[in-house]
Image 1: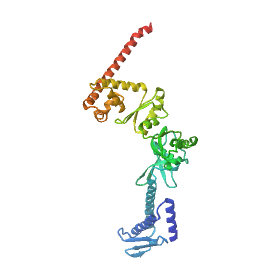
Image 2 (image 1 turned 30 degrees about the vertical axis):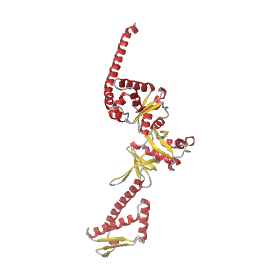
Image 3 (image 1 turned 180 degrees about the horizontal axis):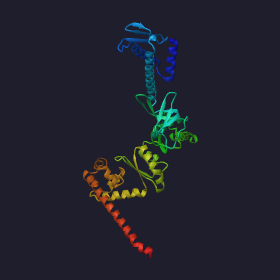
Image 4 (image 1 turned 60 degrees about the horizontal axis):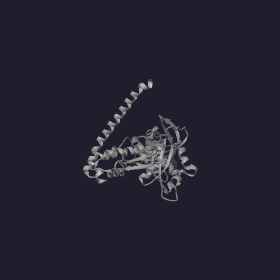
Length: 406
Protein backbone atom coordinates (compact mmCIF):
# COMPACT_ATOMS: atom_id res chain seq x y z
CA UNK A 1 0.00 0.00 0.00
CA UNK A 2 2.84 2.39 0.85
CA UNK A 3 4.57 1.79 -2.50
CA UNK A 4 1.21 2.13 -4.28
CA UNK A 5 0.77 5.56 -2.67
CA UNK A 6 4.19 6.66 -3.92
CA UNK A 7 3.31 5.51 -7.47
CA UNK A 8 0.00 7.40 -7.36
CA UNK A 9 1.74 10.59 -6.21
CA UNK A 10 4.36 10.14 -8.93
CA UNK A 11 1.70 9.70 -11.63
CA UNK A 12 -0.36 12.70 -10.50
CA UNK A 13 2.75 14.90 -10.32
CA UNK A 14 3.82 13.89 -13.82
CA UNK A 15 0.41 14.03 -15.51
CA UNK A 16 -0.71 17.32 -13.98
CA UNK A 17 2.74 18.95 -13.72
CA UNK A 18 2.40 19.44 -9.96
CA UNK A 19 5.28 19.38 -7.51
CA UNK A 20 5.31 16.07 -5.58
CA UNK A 21 5.84 17.79 -2.26
CA UNK A 22 2.62 19.77 -2.79
CA UNK A 23 0.70 16.51 -3.32
CA UNK A 24 2.14 14.96 -0.14
CA UNK A 25 1.14 18.07 1.85
CA UNK A 26 -2.36 17.95 0.31
CA UNK A 27 -2.72 14.27 1.29
CA UNK A 28 -1.65 14.99 4.86
CA UNK A 29 -4.10 17.90 5.17
CA UNK A 30 -6.94 15.81 3.66
CA UNK A 31 -6.32 13.03 6.19
CA UNK A 32 -6.27 15.55 9.05
CA UNK A 33 -9.70 16.84 7.85
CA UNK A 34 -11.02 13.24 7.72
CA UNK A 35 -9.77 12.47 11.24
CA UNK A 36 -11.33 15.61 12.69
CA UNK A 37 -14.67 14.68 11.05
CA UNK A 38 -14.40 11.16 12.51
CA UNK A 39 -13.72 12.35 16.03
CA UNK A 40 -16.09 15.31 15.79
CA UNK A 41 -13.45 17.59 17.24
CA UNK A 42 -12.62 20.38 14.74
CA UNK A 43 -10.08 21.97 17.07
CA UNK A 44 -8.31 18.76 18.17
CA UNK A 45 -4.55 18.46 17.71
CA UNK A 46 -4.29 15.86 14.94
CA UNK A 47 -1.04 15.31 13.06
CA UNK A 48 -0.61 13.14 9.92
CA UNK A 49 2.77 12.51 8.34
CA UNK A 50 3.72 10.63 5.16
CA UNK A 51 7.27 9.35 4.77
CA UNK A 52 8.44 10.67 1.37
CA UNK A 53 10.85 7.75 0.85
CA UNK A 54 8.60 4.74 1.57
CA UNK A 55 5.03 6.13 1.68
CA UNK A 56 4.47 5.07 5.31
CA UNK A 57 1.62 7.00 7.00
CA UNK A 58 1.74 7.89 10.69
CA UNK A 59 -1.00 9.76 12.56
CA UNK A 60 -1.58 10.97 16.09
CA UNK A 61 -4.28 12.73 18.13
CA UNK A 62 -3.15 14.69 21.17
CA UNK A 63 0.20 12.85 20.92
CA UNK A 64 -1.52 9.41 20.91
CA UNK A 65 -1.04 7.21 17.84
CA UNK A 66 -4.17 6.51 15.77
CA UNK A 67 -4.76 4.18 12.79
CA UNK A 68 -5.86 6.41 9.92
CA UNK A 69 -7.13 3.35 7.96
CA UNK A 70 -9.83 2.60 10.55
CA UNK A 71 -11.65 5.92 10.40
CA UNK A 72 -14.53 4.62 8.26
CA UNK A 73 -16.31 5.42 5.00
CA UNK A 74 -17.59 8.97 5.70
CA UNK A 75 -14.20 10.38 6.81
CA UNK A 76 -12.62 8.65 3.80
CA UNK A 77 -15.15 10.40 1.54
CA UNK A 78 -14.28 13.71 3.22
CA UNK A 79 -10.58 13.06 2.61
CA UNK A 80 -11.30 12.30 -1.05
CA UNK A 81 -13.27 15.54 -1.59
CA UNK A 82 -10.63 17.65 0.15
CA UNK A 83 -7.91 15.95 -1.89
CA UNK A 84 -9.69 16.58 -5.19
CA UNK A 85 -10.15 20.27 -4.35
CA UNK A 86 -6.53 20.70 -3.30
CA UNK A 87 -5.12 18.93 -6.38
CA UNK A 88 -7.31 21.09 -8.64
CA UNK A 89 -6.02 24.20 -6.86
CA UNK A 90 -2.42 22.96 -7.24
CA UNK A 91 -3.06 22.23 -10.90
CA UNK A 92 -4.40 25.78 -11.45
CA UNK A 93 -1.36 27.23 -9.67
CA UNK A 94 0.97 25.08 -11.80
CA UNK A 95 -0.74 26.09 -15.07
CA UNK A 96 -0.72 29.75 -14.08
CA UNK A 97 2.95 29.68 -13.05
CA UNK A 98 3.95 28.00 -16.33
CA UNK A 99 1.95 30.13 -18.76
CA UNK A 100 2.33 33.52 -17.08
CA UNK A 101 6.08 33.15 -17.75
CA UNK A 102 5.34 32.31 -21.40
CA UNK A 103 3.22 35.42 -21.97
CA UNK A 104 4.20 36.91 -25.33
CA UNK A 105 5.42 33.57 -26.73
CA UNK A 106 4.02 31.67 -29.70
CA UNK A 107 2.42 28.31 -28.84
CA UNK A 108 0.96 25.54 -30.97
CA UNK A 109 -2.33 23.90 -30.09
CA UNK A 110 -5.26 21.93 -31.45
CA UNK A 111 -8.66 23.47 -32.13
CA UNK A 112 -11.20 21.72 -29.90
CA UNK A 113 -14.44 23.62 -30.52
CA UNK A 114 -16.13 27.00 -31.00
CA UNK A 115 -18.10 28.68 -28.19
CA UNK A 116 -20.07 31.78 -29.28
CA UNK A 117 -17.36 32.70 -31.77
CA UNK A 118 -14.48 32.01 -29.37
CA UNK A 119 -12.05 29.30 -30.47
CA UNK A 120 -11.12 26.83 -27.73
CA UNK A 121 -7.58 25.55 -28.26
CA UNK A 122 -6.05 22.58 -26.47
CA UNK A 123 -2.41 23.38 -25.64
CA UNK A 124 -1.70 20.02 -24.01
CA UNK A 125 -3.69 17.15 -22.49
CA UNK A 126 -5.02 19.25 -19.62
CA UNK A 127 -4.80 22.91 -20.64
CA UNK A 128 -7.39 24.71 -22.75
CA UNK A 129 -6.94 28.28 -23.96
CA UNK A 130 -9.36 30.82 -25.44
CA UNK A 131 -9.03 32.88 -28.61
CA UNK A 132 -11.84 35.51 -28.63
CA UNK A 133 -13.36 36.60 -31.94
CA UNK A 134 -11.52 39.93 -31.80
CA UNK A 135 -8.17 38.13 -31.62
CA UNK A 136 -8.88 35.96 -34.69
CA UNK A 137 -7.72 36.98 -38.16
CA UNK A 138 -10.76 38.13 -40.11
CA UNK A 139 -11.70 35.74 -42.88
CA UNK A 140 -9.83 32.76 -41.41
CA UNK A 141 -11.78 29.79 -40.10
CA UNK A 142 -10.31 26.89 -38.15
CA UNK A 143 -11.49 23.29 -38.28
CA UNK A 144 -11.77 21.07 -35.22
CA UNK A 145 -8.51 19.08 -34.74
CA UNK A 146 -6.58 21.65 -36.82
CA UNK A 147 -3.14 22.63 -35.47
CA UNK A 148 -2.70 26.40 -35.15
CA UNK A 149 -0.09 28.79 -33.81
CA UNK A 150 -1.07 31.69 -31.57
CA UNK A 151 0.46 34.30 -29.30
CA UNK A 152 -0.13 33.99 -25.55
CA UNK A 153 -1.68 37.42 -25.04
CA UNK A 154 -2.70 37.23 -21.38
CA UNK A 155 -3.00 34.80 -18.47
CA UNK A 156 -5.67 35.41 -15.82
CA UNK A 157 -6.34 33.46 -12.65
CA UNK A 158 -10.01 33.22 -11.65
CA UNK A 159 -11.65 31.44 -8.72
CA UNK A 160 -12.15 28.15 -10.55
CA UNK A 161 -9.83 28.22 -13.58
CA UNK A 162 -6.82 29.77 -15.28
CA UNK A 163 -7.87 31.67 -18.40
CA UNK A 164 -5.21 31.75 -21.12
CA UNK A 165 -6.06 34.30 -23.82
CA UNK A 166 -4.60 33.69 -27.29
CA UNK A 167 -4.24 36.08 -30.22
CA UNK A 168 -3.39 35.96 -33.90
CA UNK A 169 -4.11 39.66 -34.54
CA UNK A 170 -1.68 41.26 -32.06
CA UNK A 171 1.39 42.94 -33.66
CA UNK A 172 3.67 40.83 -31.45
CA UNK A 173 2.36 37.69 -33.18
CA UNK A 174 4.09 38.88 -36.36
CA UNK A 175 7.18 39.93 -34.38
CA UNK A 176 7.49 36.38 -32.96
CA UNK A 177 6.89 34.80 -36.40
CA UNK A 178 9.81 36.83 -37.77
CA UNK A 179 11.98 35.64 -34.87
CA UNK A 180 11.11 32.02 -35.79
CA UNK A 181 11.60 32.44 -39.55
CA UNK A 182 14.61 34.80 -39.61
CA UNK A 183 17.62 33.37 -37.68
CA UNK A 184 19.44 36.72 -37.92
CA UNK A 185 16.77 38.29 -35.68
CA UNK A 186 17.26 35.62 -33.01
CA UNK A 187 21.02 36.09 -33.29
CA UNK A 188 20.57 39.87 -32.72
CA UNK A 189 22.19 40.67 -36.09
CA UNK A 190 18.90 42.20 -37.26
CA UNK A 191 16.43 44.02 -35.02
CA UNK A 192 12.77 44.91 -35.55
CA UNK A 193 12.71 48.57 -34.55
CA UNK A 194 9.02 49.28 -35.20
CA UNK A 195 5.92 47.44 -36.31
CA UNK A 196 2.43 48.63 -37.31
CA UNK A 197 -0.37 46.25 -38.18
CA UNK A 198 -3.95 46.17 -39.35
CA UNK A 199 -4.68 42.48 -38.92
CA UNK A 200 -5.80 40.53 -41.99
CA UNK A 201 -4.98 43.49 -44.29
CA UNK A 202 -1.45 44.86 -44.04
CA UNK A 203 1.60 45.17 -41.78
CA UNK A 204 4.68 47.37 -41.98
CA UNK A 205 7.87 46.21 -40.24
CA UNK A 206 10.92 48.48 -39.85
CA UNK A 207 14.21 46.57 -39.53
CA UNK A 208 17.86 47.47 -39.01
CA UNK A 209 21.06 45.41 -39.36
CA UNK A 210 24.02 45.66 -36.98
CA UNK A 211 26.26 43.94 -39.55
CA UNK A 212 26.94 45.98 -42.69
CA UNK A 213 27.36 42.74 -44.63
CA UNK A 214 23.79 41.68 -43.86
CA UNK A 215 20.93 43.37 -45.71
CA UNK A 216 18.03 43.47 -43.20
CA UNK A 217 15.30 43.65 -45.84
CA UNK A 218 16.81 40.85 -47.94
CA UNK A 219 17.32 38.62 -44.90
CA UNK A 220 13.69 39.04 -43.83
CA UNK A 221 12.37 38.36 -47.33
CA UNK A 222 14.61 35.31 -47.82
CA UNK A 223 15.80 33.56 -50.98
CA UNK A 224 13.07 33.99 -53.61
CA UNK A 225 10.83 35.32 -50.85
CA UNK A 226 10.80 32.01 -48.95
CA UNK A 227 10.89 33.47 -45.43
CA UNK A 228 8.29 36.16 -45.94
CA UNK A 229 6.08 33.68 -47.83
CA UNK A 230 5.95 31.38 -44.78
CA UNK A 231 4.80 34.28 -42.61
CA UNK A 232 2.25 35.54 -45.17
CA UNK A 233 0.84 32.00 -45.53
CA UNK A 234 0.51 31.70 -41.75
CA UNK A 235 -1.45 34.97 -41.74
CA UNK A 236 -3.76 33.93 -44.56
CA UNK A 237 -2.32 36.24 -47.22
CA UNK A 238 -1.89 39.43 -45.17
CA UNK A 239 0.42 41.89 -46.98
CA UNK A 240 3.74 42.64 -45.26
CA UNK A 241 5.99 45.59 -46.15
CA UNK A 242 9.59 45.32 -44.93
CA UNK A 243 10.90 48.85 -44.32
CA UNK A 244 14.54 49.81 -43.79
CA UNK A 245 14.89 51.67 -40.47
CA UNK A 246 16.76 54.98 -40.45
CA UNK A 247 17.55 57.35 -37.57
CA UNK A 248 16.72 60.25 -39.88
CA UNK A 249 12.98 60.87 -39.60
CA UNK A 250 12.85 62.20 -43.15
CA UNK A 251 14.38 59.03 -44.61
CA UNK A 252 12.28 56.80 -42.36
CA UNK A 253 9.02 58.49 -43.38
CA UNK A 254 9.98 58.16 -47.06
CA UNK A 255 10.81 54.46 -46.57
CA UNK A 256 7.59 53.85 -44.64
CA UNK A 257 5.45 55.25 -47.48
CA UNK A 258 6.86 52.82 -50.04
CA UNK A 259 5.96 51.69 -52.63
CA UNK A 260 5.12 55.37 -53.27
CA UNK A 261 8.00 57.66 -54.32
CA UNK A 262 8.31 60.81 -52.23
CA UNK A 263 9.40 64.13 -53.78
CA UNK A 264 9.82 66.23 -50.63
CA UNK A 265 9.27 66.02 -46.85
CA UNK A 266 8.86 68.90 -44.39
CA UNK A 267 9.01 67.98 -40.70
CA UNK A 268 7.39 70.15 -38.05
CA UNK A 269 8.73 68.92 -34.70
CA UNK A 270 6.49 71.34 -32.81
CA UNK A 271 3.39 69.65 -34.22
CA UNK A 272 4.86 66.15 -34.70
CA UNK A 273 3.73 66.42 -38.30
CA UNK A 274 5.41 65.35 -41.53
CA UNK A 275 4.15 67.05 -44.68
CA UNK A 276 4.97 64.80 -47.63
CA UNK A 277 4.88 65.94 -51.25
CA UNK A 278 4.28 63.31 -53.92
CA UNK A 279 3.59 63.63 -57.63
CA UNK A 280 -0.01 63.22 -58.77
CA UNK A 281 0.64 59.72 -60.14
CA UNK A 282 2.03 58.61 -56.75
CA UNK A 283 -0.81 60.04 -54.66
CA UNK A 284 -3.06 56.95 -54.57
CA UNK A 285 -0.05 54.71 -53.80
CA UNK A 286 1.08 56.95 -50.94
CA UNK A 287 -2.37 57.12 -49.38
CA UNK A 288 -3.23 53.48 -50.05
CA UNK A 289 -6.61 51.76 -50.15
CA UNK A 290 -8.90 53.46 -47.61
CA UNK A 291 -5.88 55.45 -46.39
CA UNK A 292 -4.17 52.30 -45.12
CA UNK A 293 -0.65 52.96 -46.40
CA UNK A 294 -0.32 56.44 -44.90
CA UNK A 295 -2.08 55.35 -41.69
CA UNK A 296 0.34 52.46 -41.09
CA UNK A 297 3.32 54.64 -42.06
CA UNK A 298 2.23 57.21 -39.45
CA UNK A 299 1.98 54.55 -36.73
CA UNK A 300 5.31 53.02 -37.75
CA UNK A 301 7.22 56.30 -37.66
CA UNK A 302 5.36 58.11 -34.88
CA UNK A 303 4.67 61.12 -37.13
CA UNK A 304 1.32 62.53 -38.23
CA UNK A 305 1.65 62.40 -42.01
CA UNK A 306 -0.08 64.75 -44.47
CA UNK A 307 0.16 63.80 -48.15
CA UNK A 308 0.08 66.71 -50.63
CA UNK A 309 0.57 67.11 -54.36
CA UNK A 310 3.09 69.79 -55.51
CA UNK A 311 0.16 72.07 -56.43
CA UNK A 312 -1.36 71.77 -52.95
CA UNK A 313 2.03 72.32 -51.32
CA UNK A 314 2.77 75.41 -53.41
CA UNK A 315 -0.72 76.80 -52.74
CA UNK A 316 -0.14 76.43 -49.00
CA UNK A 317 3.20 78.26 -49.23
CA UNK A 318 1.63 80.98 -51.36
CA UNK A 319 -1.17 81.58 -48.86
CA UNK A 320 1.31 81.56 -45.97
CA UNK A 321 3.48 84.13 -47.78
CA UNK A 322 0.48 86.37 -48.51
CA UNK A 323 -0.58 86.19 -44.86
CA UNK A 324 2.89 87.15 -43.61
CA UNK A 325 3.12 90.07 -46.06
CA UNK A 326 0.11 91.65 -44.35
CA UNK A 327 2.11 91.97 -41.11
CA UNK A 328 4.21 95.09 -40.70
CA UNK A 329 7.86 94.27 -40.07
CA UNK A 330 7.65 90.75 -41.57
CA UNK A 331 9.63 89.78 -44.68
CA UNK A 332 10.59 86.87 -46.95
CA UNK A 333 13.27 85.74 -44.48
CA UNK A 334 10.54 84.90 -41.97
CA UNK A 335 8.76 82.84 -44.62
CA UNK A 336 11.96 80.85 -45.23
CA UNK A 337 12.40 80.31 -41.48
CA UNK A 338 8.83 79.09 -41.12
CA UNK A 339 9.22 76.62 -44.00
CA UNK A 340 12.48 75.38 -42.43
CA UNK A 341 10.51 74.75 -39.22
CA UNK A 342 8.03 72.63 -41.19
CA UNK A 343 5.28 75.27 -41.21
CA UNK A 344 3.91 75.26 -44.75
CA UNK A 345 0.38 76.62 -44.32
CA UNK A 346 -1.47 79.28 -42.36
CA UNK A 347 -3.20 76.46 -40.47
CA UNK A 348 0.20 75.19 -39.29
CA UNK A 349 1.16 78.69 -38.19
CA UNK A 350 -2.01 78.97 -36.10
CA UNK A 351 -1.41 75.53 -34.51
CA UNK A 352 2.21 76.29 -33.57
CA UNK A 353 1.47 79.54 -31.72
CA UNK A 354 3.71 82.39 -30.53
CA UNK A 355 6.22 80.67 -28.23
CA UNK A 356 7.99 78.40 -30.79
CA UNK A 357 8.30 81.35 -33.22
CA UNK A 358 10.13 83.33 -30.54
CA UNK A 359 12.25 80.48 -29.14
CA UNK A 360 13.04 78.47 -32.29
CA UNK A 361 13.10 81.13 -35.01
CA UNK A 362 14.27 84.05 -32.85
CA UNK A 363 11.43 86.21 -34.15
CA UNK A 364 10.56 89.21 -31.98
CA UNK A 365 7.65 88.58 -29.61
CA UNK A 366 5.65 91.52 -31.00
CA UNK A 367 5.97 90.36 -34.63
CA UNK A 368 5.23 86.76 -33.60
CA UNK A 369 1.97 87.87 -31.96
CA UNK A 370 1.04 89.89 -35.05
CA UNK A 371 1.73 86.88 -37.30
CA UNK A 372 -0.59 84.65 -35.25
CA UNK A 373 -3.23 87.41 -35.08
CA UNK A 374 -3.13 87.74 -38.89
CA UNK A 375 -4.11 84.09 -39.43
CA UNK A 376 -7.88 84.34 -38.63
CA UNK A 377 -8.15 87.43 -40.85
CA UNK A 378 -6.46 85.61 -43.75
CA UNK A 379 -8.66 82.54 -43.26
CA UNK A 380 -11.75 84.76 -43.27
CA UNK A 381 -10.52 86.53 -46.44
CA UNK A 382 -9.90 83.21 -48.21
CA UNK A 383 -13.31 81.92 -47.12
CA UNK A 384 -15.03 85.06 -48.46
CA UNK A 385 -13.07 84.81 -51.70
CA UNK A 386 -14.04 81.15 -52.08
CA UNK A 387 -17.74 81.89 -51.53
CA UNK A 388 -17.59 84.77 -54.01
CA UNK A 389 -16.09 82.50 -56.70
CA UNK A 390 -18.78 79.89 -56.03
CA UNK A 391 -21.55 82.50 -56.44
CA UNK A 392 -19.97 83.76 -59.68
CA UNK A 393 -19.78 80.18 -60.94
CA UNK A 394 -23.48 79.58 -60.20
CA UNK A 395 -24.48 82.88 -61.88
CA UNK A 396 -22.40 81.97 -64.91
CA UNK A 397 -24.28 78.66 -65.22
CA UNK A 398 -27.63 80.43 -64.98
CA UNK A 399 -26.69 82.91 -67.74
CA UNK A 400 -25.52 80.11 -70.05
CA UNK A 401 -28.61 77.94 -69.49
CA UNK A 402 -31.01 79.78 -71.97
CA UNK A 403 -28.37 79.68 -74.72
CA UNK A 404 -27.92 75.96 -74.22
CA UNK A 405 -31.65 75.34 -74.61
CA UNK A 406 -32.00 77.54 -77.61
